Image (cartoon, rainbow, N blue to C red):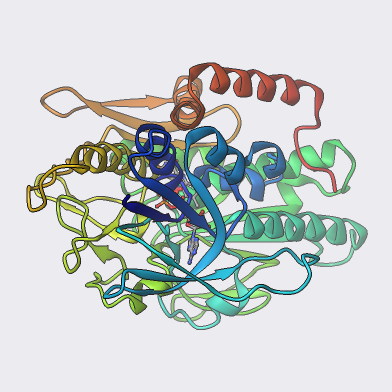
Length: 434
Ligand SMILES: Cc1cc2nc3c(=O)[nH]c(=O)nc-3n(C[C@H](O)[C@H](O)[C@H](O)COP(=O)(O)OP(=O)(O)OC[C@H]3O[C@@H](n4cnc5c(N)ncnc54)[C@H](O)[C@@H]3O)c2cc1C
């Protein structure tokens, strides 16, 4: 029996494992194994809500082992260390919690087909001091750590109130979707913490949130008027937006911009771009400038037909639309495609061509806090665009997560989770209070 190993259970990998487990694993047509270094899945596009204290990741995470048991695949909690492509063998390091006792030895795992769905990591673009001093939003641990620091900075500044300069300066580097979504949520969190008397600061005056964007406008992937709308909305909420402002150096308490400018920063969040994880450079596979694995239209690596790559760690260039962006929408479409392609290829004569992936851009939505969003929907045979804003756009934004839940759990369970979430929101504080 062939063994399909998927490394990385994020937006793309978990959906692929679930689909392949249902169609092949359960029926004994293939052994499907998912490897991830975390025991739980959290949908990455929601990380800014963890970083702003709005969402408890414990409640929203999915246990890989439970998903595996329900959907006919095996889960291995381990970190990929290396790949011996000639022997089709992976080296895996066990991931143990702090109190799990004696460390187990490194394991090996053979595969017939390997799918890499490793995601991406923050790209610091070699800016001096960035790697040492900034916070990032690559995973739940980092998002929780950012909120703890924001909370602590508010409390400390509140205790020092009255002293000169007693304010919280949050600097967000990067005016893409991650930076904009986090800035909008943080503004609400600062006000909510004041409401619950966690601090005595005036959120509008003492908690300064600034976005520094090197380009000419925020959200460059959206049409001009939507970028302008997002900027105007953020400014109306007291958030400072500085476009055309490149960060040249970062220190523990400030960032350097341009030639001579220095901005104080109690907390700096780097959201200026992503690149493939370091391990992609050790596999002997062709990579692009962003360290992503170059794949063909079949999503196979250009160098090895037994290795596929999907999502943020893959570089897929669509003949019509160009390079697919690092977005959950791409990871989802590639997971759906590959689940079908691998199932269809099973049992076929070797050498027969695999199906080819086509990326379709359905648009993009960016949340501007709990009640608003901006974006554009794309569709129709002529690629028509429809700009959407405000509460309607926010409702559509919420549907993206529902879609992910439905892909993993089916309609009934996804609806139950959504209802439980709605009820929880009504009986819990709007922000984490410790
Ligand atoms: C704050 C934020 C907001 C975003 N908003 C949006 C949005 O609105 N719309 C949108 O389309 N996209 C959005 N994105 C981007 C989106 O989250 C990613 O494009 C998407 O998650 C990529 O999916 P993936 O499966 O490639 O990787 P990921 O979802 O990142 O998953 C990668 C998985 O691989 C595992 N892993 C990595 N290395 C190893 C290893 N060596 N061994 C074992 N396991 C490993 C990780 O633990 C993780 O579970 C946002 C991202 C962020 C950070």
